[in-house]
Amino acid sequence: MESSRDRWSDWLLQRRFGGDPQAVERARATLHPVRDRVLDQTLLHEAAVLLDVGCGDGLIAFGALERYPGCRVIFSDISQPLLDHAAALAGDLDLLARCTFLHAPADDLSALADQTVDAVTTRSVLIYVQPKLAAFQEFYRVLRPGGRVSIFEPINRFAAPEPPHVFHGYDVTPIQHLTDKIKAAKRANLADVSSMIDFDERDLLGWAEAAGFEDIHLRLEAEILAHTEDASWESFLHTAGNPLDPTIAEVIEHALTPEEVDEFTRYLQPLVSGKRGTRRMALAYLWASKPARALP
Ligand SMILES: C[S@@+](CC[C@H](N)C(=O)[O-])C[C@H]1O[C@@H](n2cnc3c(N)ncnc32)[C@H](O)[C@@H]1O
Image: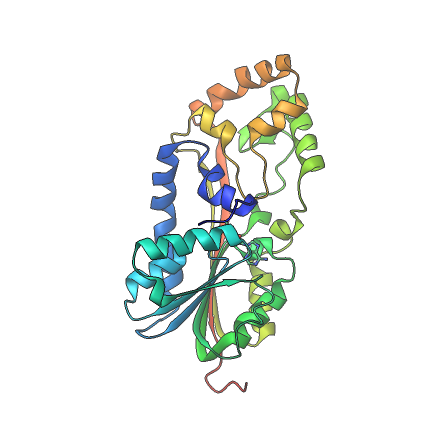
């Protein structure tokens, strides 16, 4: 039976979709190409062992099991509910014999012996890890010589913090007095999110090199785009951007009076429904090798 929920499982299995079934489909369409690019760079082969750090509900891990029928996968995460969820799914898919589940933080994989895996992957995990160099050092330690690390991380510093007159990509100049209150309430109640914006692509390269990796590659993709997704107002209100974020609906309930909520809705709803906003994001793919002659 699955253990109880935590904020990581709540977000991955529910809150990121804002109660919108179409958002599940949209996420799949966006995430599968990312998964495939991360896996491409592992150069994994049959009978190899992959460690997916911060596996969540198994996007990368199940992708590897399907793509490399002889491989074995270690699912690791700090969330026991998510590990239980992935294990249940692996059971349903008759894949348990090829899976191991490890409850551990990215920066302390001491349950794994040195040089025991062929590839390490992570997707959108290091943003939640404070000691990022220590995580890279752990990836290096558990990799066999010649093994590969393949990482995808959003570079949130690219778009954060938003200027005062912008809220979730929308120009809110006429109601900035309200969005100021919302932003202040969010800051006051938010968990420490510094790890999400305290680094960029150069830091990722530096940590990979400092950990001992060679043949290091990084591709940065940055975009400033008009909103194109058909997101409803309801899903805009009820979607949390990441596991540490409250939804807008949760914040405005505390930050605004009912009259202010009406004013906020009257102004912003047409902008959201009309997709009259801008999305800024930067994403980094990094892959690298442990030297083939690396000493233990
Ligand atoms: C945004 S989710 C990504 C999940 C998965 N990698 C994917 O691609 O769908 C972040 C994941 O990182 C995990 N996580 C957060 N902090 C972590 C840490 N310090 N060490 C390992 N995993 C962590 C969370 O439990 C969650 O599963």
